[in-house]
Image (tube, rainbow, N blue to C red; front, side):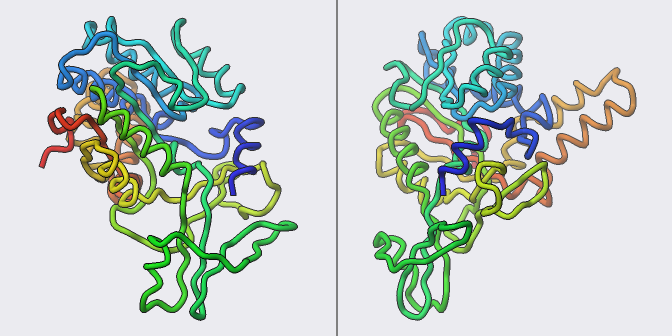
Length: 322
């Protein structure tokens, strides 16, 4: 279920179909930039250091982050080099227009230079392709797409999935192999040298089953099978599985934590209040409404989770304290 999304990102502006947190509020990117600066201090101020983003969209998050870093943490700004993991030429052009000269692009994590790393990834993992396994009647099938419809074929799922069928009637289990490979490689890197990563995405904090595949076109839910390549496809991120893989690879793991809790602890509302001062009433109200949309539990605050990975010697990252 990944070819359609690859075609979509290559030919479309995804932000016409959905809105990510950096597009909602500039304070979001600023807060994450300051999180990176504090983390750099916790890591012992390594220089040089890579500041990287996976799936950077239009470059909005990183532009906001760099603005806050330049103002509040000039030593970190001087030490960092900027690296983006992005495969779409169209999005790379948008990012180049938003970000400073010297930015380096990569198609994969493993081409990043061998240096201390702080990585941000917001709504990156949920866009990676998934597999769906269905258990019913005592047997497993895997879903495929053929001629514009789902078809199922007998399958033997991985043992970790097969074990979920015990005592169940019918279940759907999703497997995102690219997300698992990315987190395993990232965690292995962070275990071997100073570094940290902050991953924010949609998904449950506890193990869950069910069909979470969805499509958005023009901000409206759409049929995932209609007009391949014309809508953005997403699925919930399996945070418990990714956390277990990161631990197995040697990284320290913190979270997952609801996004609203993390952003509130990091000062989202204080920063928003400062931005709103002196603004016309309508603009001030819009800034506050955007912050509430990101943090309130009934909106994005609970559904989006934050997972931090870091070198075992790194203190608990900001916002993840007990």
